[in-house]
Length: 338
Image 1 (spheres, rainbow, N blue to C red):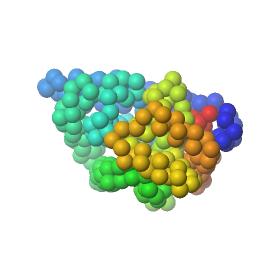
Image 2 (image 1 turned 180 degrees about the vertical axis):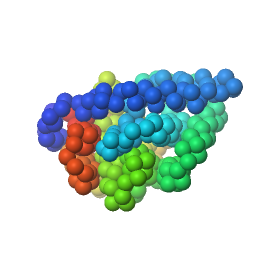
Image 3 (image 1 turned 45 degrees about the horizontal axis):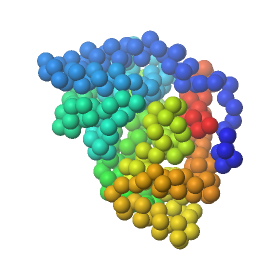
Image 4 (image 1 turned 90 degrees about the vertical axis):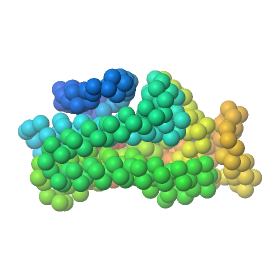
């Protein structure tokens, strides 16, 4: 392990995500079956594209959180399955839209839908997923859930627009970055957790605690993903290192690097992002600077902070195995940097 990476505390379980996935495997299978049923369409291309998207992988992390948060209260029923499906549909709709905006050709090691079927079909299929999601919410009958998940769809879109406004803007502030990922990423994690409180009719304070867990978990998750783009390998991460750099995305590692660099280095970095494309040589220069200023360690500390806040948010709930699984997962997210 490089000296500029700070290890987190050792977890009792080697992979809390796999443990959580194994615990709720039957529920996740029901979510997948429900989605498959809901995405049936007389338009053959829609079914083909949706099927390809969901078969391409994904950790089902967001629906897992909905199921896990419901289990905190011993929920009995099937609403959590249907609403977990809604959460996953929203997530995948945003992936379809993001890949078009980012002009991405690959995701999770597979060709993107827009790479195969084009941008127009991808956008419309994303819209189709959202429309099916809203149908499920209406069928659920809860105005609280409808308001929650519809508002998060709006927030994600606003986050995407805010990111576009600051595209290739090397002088972006950390505050702005956190605002972007708070809307684009953590808002859906927060909603996924809060759903469990809604369907169990918990108190306002309990729902806020679940929301806080999800929101801070989501920020930690995204910061870690952004770190891994500069400190990873395609085998463990599922994509080649430097994707964000080549696409001109300004994430926390680049923001911190710019802040720590001297005037001459800042000018070089700024000129890199003015250009339409960035080279391998420029990426290597950037990685050398990140090592010089220990940027990865600094970013990881930020991720650890949000991970700890996430875990602490569940402090109001009794000590149960369900609670511990979620807290272990919060710390594990940052442990992906090794």
